[in-house]
Structure formats: structure tokens, C-alpha cells
View (tube, one colour):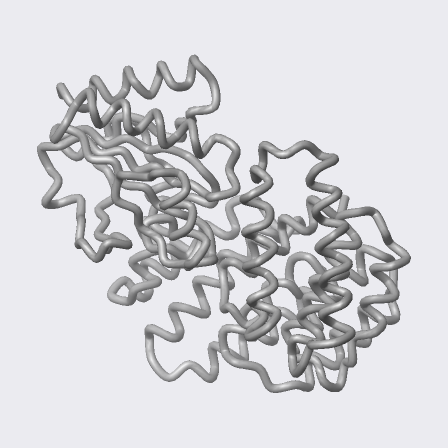
Length: 372
């Protein structure tokens, strides 16, 4: 159960600020842990290997908290440790770790995030106390949006979440800020189990109509289009800067077939994706352009993955995760492949490389896209 809630929490926080991301020593430790997992083989490691590594990392994190942690690292580290313990079904250890968080010293967003874990462990007193404490603390604007989303969705504190959104909207000083708040509120509605499935999209449509000249109003318009795209439709226009610093866009690539390959370093199909794209590029040459869009939030890890996997197609992604512009506009939150033909029309949507049949389908779609 916690794995599902953890995934939801991770996605919510990835949509917002890096306020919970540890700084300094804890950030170094997180990068070290990520590198250890990559060296182990990522998703290809056995469960036993992953469990052994996580046990070692848990001990290392506990030692860090005991000897080195300073400032907010003390509480960010404890939140990380509790997550490790929950993933290993150590509910008793996770509860003890959570109770060691100082509500007076910890930042507001961390307390609300910790409250989601306390809720999972049925620590109602702790959950409620942290939500109350967080409501009295000052927090950066992006952190407050993250808090509002968690309150409205995971914690089911809808009224409290709406108050935070309303306050953020009242404090906004221009249309861009207002559009940002409204976009995050609309996106948060997707996780409200008490609302109709289309509630979030109705709010996006209002945003697109009310503030069309803002960035987030424009994103809302494209995101709505993405939910209705079909093969043969005009593709969503896009423009992006690659990690190598080159500007690319749909307009200047007319006349070439385009593969938009959304990927993550932890995806077990990444090696297959890289080899499949390389084969297609060799086959079609300049008639085909492959753009890799990385959905990860660690910029250093993205660079390492590009090098280690020998990715030789242009990569877009600098650690914004699902807030990367291409991912936002195409409504992508996980690895997938979209293909655009040389006339700018959709040739394929939601494709994957995980099976022989799916790779054959990609090859067929690319062939049509290049000849259309």
C-alpha cells in the first residue's frame, strides 16, 4: 500500500519546487545512493540485491543523521530514512524516525509530507499536529503550492488545501503568478477521489480561456489537446533546448519524421530504447530526428545516464522532471514514445520498446512517418 502512496507523493512533489530536496551533505549522499543503484544495474538488479543495497544505505543514512546532519538536513534526512524503512515494511522503525522530527524546527512542506507517512502508519495524533504546525509557518510560494496539493489529495484535507490555494491566488501580483496557482490547483484535482474524472480538465479549460497569453494558460491549452490527440491530428507545437545547447523546434523540423522518446534513467527498458533508436537513425539517416526527453529530476544523474548508456541522440532535460516543457505540453509523466510524421501529423502515440511486437510496431510507424 505504501508503494502506491509513495509513488503518488513522489509525483506530486516532482510537479513543484525542490523545497524538500536536501542541500549540502544530504544531497551528496543522495547522489551517492543513486550512483550505487546505477552501478548495481538499476531495475535489472534482483530484489535480493536491491534489498541488500537499501539495507546498507539505511545504515549509512542513520550514521549520517547521528554524526553529520545539520540544519534542515536533520529533518530531510529523517524523512528519507522513514521512507526507506517503510519500503522495507519496517513500520515500527519508520514511526520512531518520524516521531524524532522536531515540528518547531522542520520546514512546513516537510511536515506536511511527513504527515502523509504518519497517516499511512495510523499515527493520527502526529499527522494532525504536523498539519496544524505547518499551517502556522511561513513557506516559499512553490512550497505552499506543494503543501496545498498534498493536503487536498493524499491527506484529504480539502478545505485546508483550498485555503492555501486561495491565499496564494490572492497574493499573486500578475497574471503569470495567477496562472501558475490555477494550474497547480487544476492539476491537484486529478487526485481528488471525491470529484468527477473530468473536474481537473474543466479547470484547465477555464485557465486556458481566462489567461491564454500566460505560459501556464498556454500549457493548459496544449495539455488539454494532448488528452484528445489521435493519429492523423496536427502534432502539438514545441520548442526546446538540448543539453548540448542546441535549439530545436517542431517548425524547423517539418519535412523530417520525429520521434519524441520520453525516458528515465531508472527505466529497465532504457538500454533497449537506446539501441532501437540507434538502429532507426542508421536506417533513415537525416530523414528521421530522435529527441530524448528525460523525466528525471537530478541533472547530474541525467548527464551520467547519457554518458553511461551511450545516448547519441539529442536529449532535452535539465532536472525539471515532469515539469519539462515538452512533458507538460504532451501530458507525459512516464516513459513513452510519440512519433510525428514529416508533415507534422501524429503518426504514433504511447508506444514502447519493451517487447518484440512493440518494437516492430515502432519500426512500422517510423517507416510510414518518413514516407508520408
